[in-house]
Image (cartoon, rainbow, N blue to C red; front, side, top):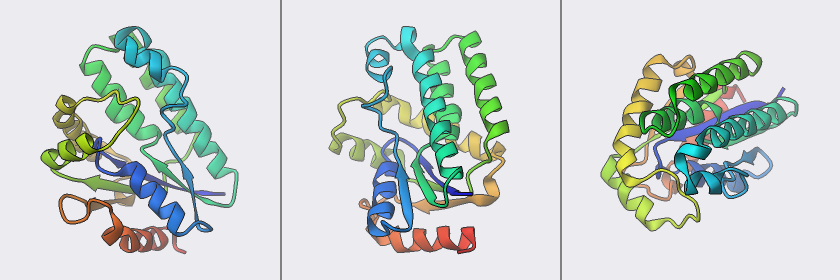
Length: 205
């Protein structure tokens, strides 16, 4: 059965950057499973009408991430996700519920769906939590160019609070490694070897 490594963190922390770096540097060792937000069928319409299209967008994301996990588990590989199923629920769905994009019955539907998926799929084997102060995240977000970006600068503090709340109740806390990417390593290159070693040690490789 394949192994799942999930890179989590706030918007702008470098989840996708780290996922790509790991898989490009050790291309025969790790396989990337990216968010692919441009390709998601409801993302564009969600951005156009946040309240009307939020439920379809979030159900699609959870299903997409679950399908990625299923593929990883069915093959002898180490799959690396940027974000993933758990971050979709505990951060984005809870954020959109707090902002009023999801009504309470819709949030509860997402919660039921997430719970069912996690009953079927095992939790990630390794979780890398990228951490950086909000002012650094604001700067990084201003430097990246994304055609679609649902979260806003004003959401970063709220997301940081959701991450901390999630980590306090997380069932995979023992497999979570905190990596500080605050100021000294914006490209993650200085941390790359250490993160790979952490993954290999955690997987017993």
